[in-house]
Image 1 (cartoon, rainbow, N blue to C red):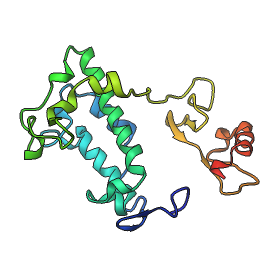
Image 2: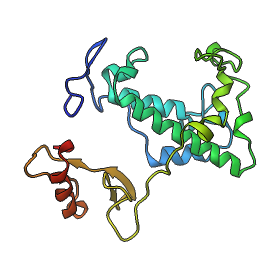
Image 3: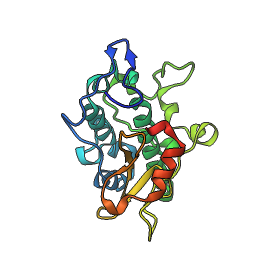
Image 4: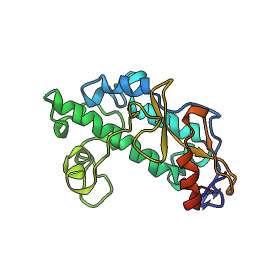
Amino acid sequence: VTGPFRRFTTPYGPLRRDIGADRRLMSKTDLENVFSRRWMWEISNPSAEDRYNLELLHNHVHVWIGEQMSRIESSSYDPAFFSHHAFVDCLWEEFRQRQRQHGINPGRDYPRIVGDQGHQPLVSMGLGRLLVVDGINDIFTQRIYSCQRRPECVPGTNHCGSPYIRCNWSTRTCLPLIMSNRPNNPVAQGPAQQQVPWWARLMQRNGLFG
């Protein structure tokens, strides 16, 4: 592992990853498939078809990162776990917002068939008095956190409204800007038309990505 967590240790030994050895990341098509559904049972186990199954797509990313992240008992010790789950949670919230647009109350949309006994609606969540069904309550996004909209390419530019991501206009996809490992000459890695001079100036002021 390289980067800011290269010396990170876990109860399962040093942090390790095996990027891209198996499975894959989510694609734009994956998200379009998920958002084409209306009910929670259509995007979750055990009822959802694979192409609509947000849980399955989430699992693929765990395996794609590999090593500790690929196993349930150790995945939360990889710092990527929290970013990944925050992203998936916001995808689910976007799905819920779309439900409202179709007249569906997401706070009442708990599937009748859940498969695993631990997913029964009245089972304890293991967090105080919370039950599993409380997980679909709107109180979390109303009082605790909110999600920003997924970034989109800004017309006429090569960015996506953030200094940390760029637009790949060939796919109309916003991607993270990966910096070179040269602290004295930081250069954006990617297609030439997506490299912009202000990145070098930014990196000279902020050594975090050096």
